[in-house]
Length: 496
Image (tube, rainbow, N blue to C red):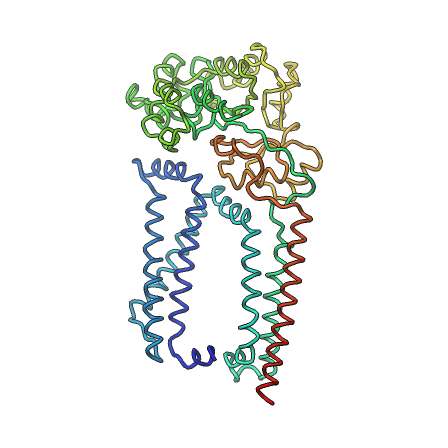
């Protein structure tokens, strides 16, 4: 018998170590690939820390790939040795190194996930998106494993110490372990209901708000990128609004100007100063688009997602004023989502920053029903009401979340007809999950990824999902009964 032959071999634990080592590091590498929508942002963040352009994701892929190759080679070389000999005794280096690397990579991944913060949620979300297939594959595998398990079951008790446990107790422990393990595996699909299982009819596709104008398509917070985003069926755009030292609101996300303009060339002595310390005439001297045209950080120009004509506009893109944003938004009938970057306390327009924005918005004649200031801040809400702009959408009309609610909470909002906007979603899988749960609006840097989706990639009605698992349970139970019957009959024939 297979287990009896293996039982006679010594050193099998090293094979198990090499196998677990390879699988463990492979899972870590999978995490890196699941974070692909955020690679550019992660690289940019790390580059900011070290002060030069640094591709941390490529380094991580190489760093995780090398030990996987090492572990696979060790496994197959030692498996080959074990076939020729009864004793497996690896070199000390190949005993200490895999254990050391396991500890090192566990600490490394823990630190990375902690630093990544909200980004790391995507790992769980993508795995959950495909969990229907993961559950199915796991359960089918367990059904196929029933025959060798039942066949070798009488031998399993020999692997537990006779000094610690009596024979009868060992049999009970093994049986309980198998029942609990199989029970958990087969009930998990219903205990942990995937988000792409829909309750009732498929909800409408979420509308798209272009985050920073669609930062994956062009230079963020510019009119040029918003013009490109319109081609991908956006209904609105989100902008980061600051105010210049002389009182003119403009668009800029970062505190300083280095990342998205050529401030180091035009004002080298002021490159580290906050953007709000510049006058509007100084800000208008800067180029806010050539960096994207030159670097093509998301590959949209090379891939043809953006036309050559659109890309050419990026070369000379300027930092837009809020007045220009209002004109563009009104002309194209878009929603406008405010992200307010309040000036420091010593800024001359600190106290009336929001009032200036609100007055400009009202005076522009734009449809206030399409202005989104999704906050519940009482001071801001009171100012809106005082100015007679109650049509503006606030945090009381829309729930605005950085994807921090549970699946059950999202479904509850949909059932209660309470609109929700989720930011910032660049993963197709996560977009489809939110679609299945009835989210109203999705804020994204990459609207082009979702344009051609007529339905979620994977979704299953609740009734169909339950029917699948009832069928699987019947197959599993029938297989267990048939296999056990055949093994008993075969045993009786041998004994007779």
